[in-house]
Amino acid sequence: MPLAPAITDLEQLKAHPAIARLLAWNPAAVEGAKFDREEMSIYVERSSIREACALLRDDQACSFNFLSDVTCVDWYPSEPRFEVVYNLLSIPQKERVRLKVRLSGDAPAVESVTSVWPAANFFEREVYDLFGVRFTGHPYLRRIQMPENWEGHPLRKDYPVEGYR
Amino acid sequence: MAHLTTMPTLDPGQDRTMILNMGPQHPSTHGVLRVILEIDGETVIRIMPDIGYLHTGIEKTCEAKFYQQVVPLTDRIDYLCPLTNNLCYCLAVEKLLGLEIPPKAQWMRVLLNELTRINSHLVWLGTHAMDIGALTVFLYCFREREDILRFFEAVSGQRMMTSYFRIGGLALEPPLDFFDRVRAFADRFPSKINEYENLLTANPIWLMRTKGVARITAEDAIALGASGPTLRGSGVDFDLRRDMPYSSYDKFKFNVPVAQEGDVFARYQCRVQELRESNKIVQQALDGMPSGPIKADAPKVVLPDREKMKTQMEALIYHFKIITEGFSVPAGEVYQAVESPRGEMGYYVVSDGTAKPYRVHMRSACLANLQLLPAMCEGRLIADVVAAIGSIDIVLGEIDR
Image: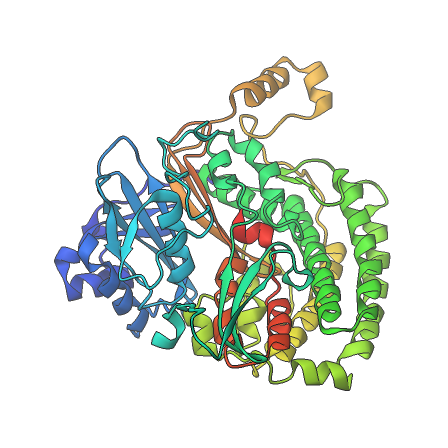
């Protein structure tokens, strides 16, 4: 099966229930969307991620009630450098959607979604630990995989694979 | 939901309570999990899991390897279900490439995945029962597990670190008598499950240690990101194999066991029933195994047969190119989830168009399930903590990566 080209035009994608719901709530919250390889990604404006998550969780039509995963991608050296990725799953609808927030490389911070899904607790701690992205409002933002006194954030692209020696 | 997010402020200055470290070298923590308990007598007031002792930076290592070189790393994440990890990674990269996998390879993947699930559940059952004090079950379970490890050795040459699934198909044809041996095993295995159940399911000591212990409601389980038997034990009827099928699972008939109580016993029931269902899937896979190739027709991605390399120039060139410079994957990103024995195992793979993955992230089912521990154990006895840890079936290699 040959790959279909990705659709990035918001006009074509706005029928998707999650995008429609977000646009109806606040058009400024949706920065863009991408439909690629049968997966939907929505770029959400940085300050509205927590509310967007709560909205999608409680909405009757899409009900993305399960947070599968939170992770991050470092696009060093381009800006905005970090992309925090939220993989949402709807258990009733059996569908997935991916929310993304772009963050600048200079003191990256985004609001925590632990108040929406307590599951985000460990995931966000891991992103903080390995990428150095701060989650404001997180109840216990401490390193989780690396030792407490570790310097640097290993999964950043400017951190060498062998570590600093 | 605030009761699920408050983190403990462990304060040793208080008079009544004391802080107790369980682990990291405690046999009931299944690896190197450290659990910090604040206790009042025998009662657990607060509990905090401390992880990271097995962190080896696999995600970072993946970024420095070619796509096909990542497969052996995925074995080492969850050492109880290496083939599930192989499958999930291969499916993710195949989705990125847009590769079509031949039916025989898909069915072999299903067959081996269910054997892996049986293998993993047997280790869980044995160790979980041993934690609670039923030592005999362990020996029974490892007897059957040995048979399954021999199957893995027969197909891949390795008992545990199999790397048998490759991007585009399978590494090798299974040996000639493989299917007969698996069938003999699948025929006798249900009677073995009866043996385990005879030892436990109606055993009054087992029931007292597990019934009503470490309860979790369906709402809390979903909010905390639980998946797999831990979620189904709380009455949520969701299984990725049935509800979002991959690798031809939609062609198999099986039930998804669900229990309503949300306690240790409910999770035990789910997993034991899953052993029977997995065995059914194994039998269906043997009955309907298609014939045909085991690798996709994609010479730039899949290594050529050894025989062709000796006779055809192109095959030799492709082999040389794949080994020395890998193959490039079109830019994009994919999140692929499979139902591992522990829950939703997900691989998030980002490609920038080169021969090495830009980012590989593993969504670990155990990491999310471990977050249930405080909700399960607070206000209960220390001995119940051991039962609760066993019942969420953690593998620390997968949590720490």
